Structure formats: C-alpha cells, structure tokens
Amino acid sequence: MKQVALGRSGLMVSELCLGTMTWGTQNTEAEAFAQMDMATERGVTFWDTAEMYPTNPVSAETVGGTETIIGNWFAARGGRERVVLATKITGKGKTVRADQPISAATLRTAVEGSLRRLQTDYIDLYQLHWPNRGSYHFRQMWRYAPRFDDPAAIRDNMAEVLRAAGDLVAEGKIRALGLSNESVWGAAEWLRLAGMENLPRMASVQNEYSLLCRQFDTDWAELSVLEDMPLLAYSPLATGLLSGKYAGDVVPEGTRRERTPDLGGRVTAQVFPAVSAYLGLARDHGLDPCQMAIAFTRQRPFACIPIIGATTLAQLESNIGAADLTLSDEVLADIDALHRLYPAPY
Image (tube, rainbow, N blue to C red; front, side, top):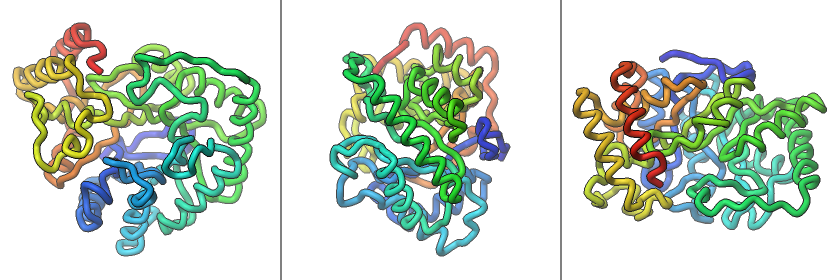
C-alpha cells in the first residue's frame, strides 16, 4: 500500500483510510477485530474514528464504543506504532456534551477521554468534527443562511482552541490537528490564526466527497492545493448508494438503510437516476462500481485520501482493491459528462 504525506504534518499515511463508525452497532467487536486485522495485513494503517462513534444511530448509550473497540484491539494485538490513528471531538450537539461548543476545556476533556478508550498515549490526528458556528454540510446546503452576531467571538474561540491544542501537542498527547465538515472561510481563518501565533496548523480536512457529492471541487480544491491541506473523503460510496445495493429504492436486510431509511437525507427523487447512470458507466467499462467510485477520489487534482468503511470482510477486501485501479481518460471523461447531468442529486 502506497504511503503519502498528510499535508505538512510530518505524518505519512496509507493512501486509503479505514473508516470505523459501524463498529459497535452494525458490527460486533469480533467483526471489527477482523476488519482491523485485514486492514493491517493489506497495509491500510491510517484509521479514522470519533468520540461519538458508532453511528446508525448515534446514541448516548453507545458514545465512545468504537474507540473502546479499537483500544481493545491495540491491547490484544499490540503494535500501536503500526497505525496512524485519527479521531475527533464532537461539535456542539445533544448527545456527547449537551449544547457545549468546542472550547479549550472541552478539547482537553475529549482528548483525555479518547486516550483512555483507545488505550494509547497519543493521537496522531485530532480533528474538530464540525465547527461551532454550524455549516452547510450534512445536506444543510439547501437552506444554508450564514448569520453571525459576533464574528470577533468566533475568532476568539478559534484562537482559544488552537492554544489548547498547542498545549496538548507539547504534552505529546496529539501529533497533528485537523478539520472536518468545515468551510473554505473556516479553514483559511484557522490557518491565519495559527500563523499569527505560531500555533498548530490544521493539517487536513475531512469532508464528504464522492461521485454524488462534489462540493469540494471549486474553492475548496483551490485552498487544498495552495495550502497543502489534503481532503479525507468520507462516504466515497455515498453511504453505499454507489454500490447499487439500494437501486430500485429497496432496503436490503442488515444494511445501513434499514437503520437510517433516508441515509441522512441522501435518498431523494434525483439520486436513483444518478446512481443508475454511474452503475451503467461502470458496467460499460467492465469495472466494479465501488472500486470505480473510490479510484475516482484518488485521481482528483487535489490530494485526496478516501475513507473506506465496510460492514463485511468481503466489502472491505473489494474496497481495498481500489488502490490498484487507475481510471482511464475515457472513464474520467464519461464521469465528467454524468456529473453535468447529475451535479447535486442530494
């Protein structure tokens, strides 16, 4: 498995990242162990989790469960140094720390909690799961209306969080800092503030990106390239839509859609025609549709590391195989044509 630089962080990571958010709901601990074993054997040593995982659904009873499973794997298998581990602090919400925004205090509390559950002394990449001020992510772009009463307070909070992160870096508890579900303005402001005070620089951003969700392709792509901030692309298979398993608007037993019928707002009248078109494209070129979708993210004009999640070992093995696939110019041209027809199906 090829290793790539994670921006300017100094970290080298596998070109695919292992997603973990099903571990503890859709997957048992034993199934998660099997996935971690396979990933390690195949060289996928960059793993992503979060303090609020597992999902589908997120609940107060399961918060921290995925980190605990990963920590148990480290305890059983050893070799923490083999893995570049990313996790996240939850933003303001109802489940983890009710209505508490990310601050210096919550950052430290969250880091300490994750370290205990993960049974490790350090976190390689610590990400802010979503910004305090809200965002257009999670299908919120259709009603996004940015209004801020106190912009100075937003910047003061950002500086406070960066200073706290600097302390945690100095203590050896985190190695690098990253963003998630962030906007271009937000990323630029985090970078500006870090530069002003010589504080930790945001190394990467984890936003949704797939054939069906390409909000990153314009202003974000420019910032990513010019500031050397790689995209960690979550949901590169659009929560399984691009596999074709929901084609015809079906709900197969044991799938994510059985737990979340609208797939977090991704099931729309427009999405199934788009999925059908991409499935047809893959068929016409003799490609596995999942591997095609993952390979597409790896061939963008900006640095992009897809986060591959799976509920079965067969799915994981197939997704890892996408690392060996390079899409031809003909396939990429056909993808461009379909993107014009279905620019934002959800």
